Amino acid sequence: MIPDEMIGTLHAHAYRALGQPTIAESKSKEWNEEYPQFKIGGKASMDDAGEMTGDDLLGKLSQYRMAMVDTDNWSNDVRNFNDYWGPWKQSNGYMDFTDLIEEAIHSVDKAPGDPSLMLGDEAQDWSKLEFELFCENWGKYADKVILAMDADQSLYQWRGADPEYFIDRRLPQERVHVLSQSYRVPKLVHDFSQTWIRKIRNRIDADYNPMERKGLIRTMCARYQDPERVVDDIHMQLDRGKSCMILTTCGYMLKPIIHALKEEGIPYHNPYRKQQAYWNPLQRKSKAVMPVDRVASFLNPKWGKRLKSVIPWSRQEITNWIKALRANDILKRGVMANLEDITAKFDPNNLGAFLSMFNNPEDGHRALFMDLQWFRDSLQSKHEKTLGPIIHATQVYGEQVPFETPQVIVGTIHSVKGGEADCVYIFPDVSYKACKGMGEHQRAQDAMRRVFYVGFTRAKEELVLCEPSSNLYMELN
Image 1 (spheres, rainbow, N blue to C red):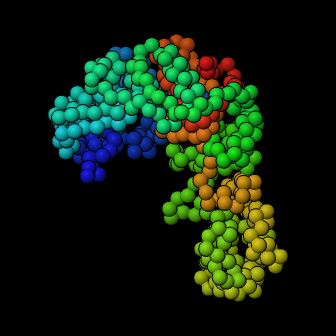
Image 2: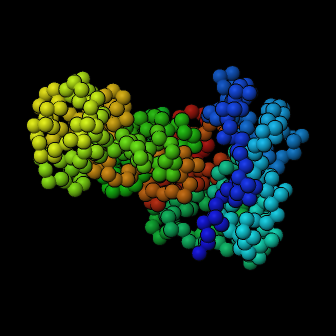
Image 3: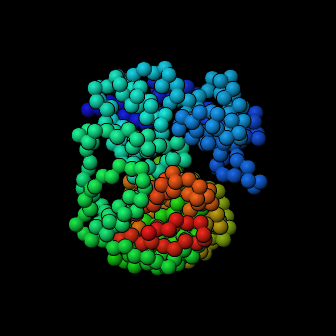
């Protein structure tokens, strides 16, 4: 068995090998106070004046370094940023994420544990700097180095990933092993995606066999800004028991789609980006009562082990859902403030005590019948925003919704790499920056072609190509 400490990211291995230095990015507050003109720790995007933010500059600096670009070829604004960033790190004894790889190259001769076999997974997303550390530095001390990769699925050029570093160093054919059978992609999607990716000039062609099923590719007159037809189609797919995936190239493009899903009561999630709350309204967290927990607690007697008592909820369940109610309208004075004490003395067979918590006994009776519409109508406004869509989805798709995994995935193509669904909807729109880059550089066009290739190959049965919302898009043919 491989010890846990021998498994991890390159950054994690380098971090431990270097004695767990303080990471500069974790000191953003300290940096921001000293250099407010270069604030980091927010969202990397140009400000209102079109200037690059501190996050943009730090990201671009990392990209240059990961790609091992000579400093003479850095842009002036990045070079200026580094004139402050570099000395600040050095004076405080901090290292940024890129320093971990650079310093490991210079001072950590062998891979931690001095392994005889080294396996690098998802190597298509490594930068030139990471290849240098793993293959050229640590790899020369191992008996065998194995790289598992698919250069056609390289998605992270924005952080310095360089699939051409490996492509340009082609190995002898006898040292290359191709996994020749897909266990997801049907024939039509396979043929379409292979024709698409083969338009990239500098790549290694690796044939693989699709699944036996034929599959389906269709176009749909639907835009991400007007996704009603997609939502209607998803309803039909769900009625057939199929899973669905909705993909865009940028997160902001998902907002009107998610709004439409909420309006239609379609449960959705993104299991690959659980920290993205907007994509995961049904998410749960340990040691926290989340919106879905309040709805589930209200309904739990119907789906969990029903208590053999007059009042069907446990003390914790009652606390969870009652705390979401409007105290003044629904509950008697003092109930919400003393709820913990009241539930601590809770008698599950005392109907009168339960009904006495409500201003109107009818509210108590509707609660006992687990009336979802009553529950929604009784919510505080702050809870209506989060619990309302969950309740609506439960009313549309059944009271199992808070207890089951949604069959619809929403996300950017980057976020679902490795995922799959029966039916995949793809919108061809790209950002202004990506569109501009594609018009200027073949590498940028190839990079975006790889992004859509990953999106196409998520489909197990159907691939649906949607229409662009503007003139910023890539022709999907």
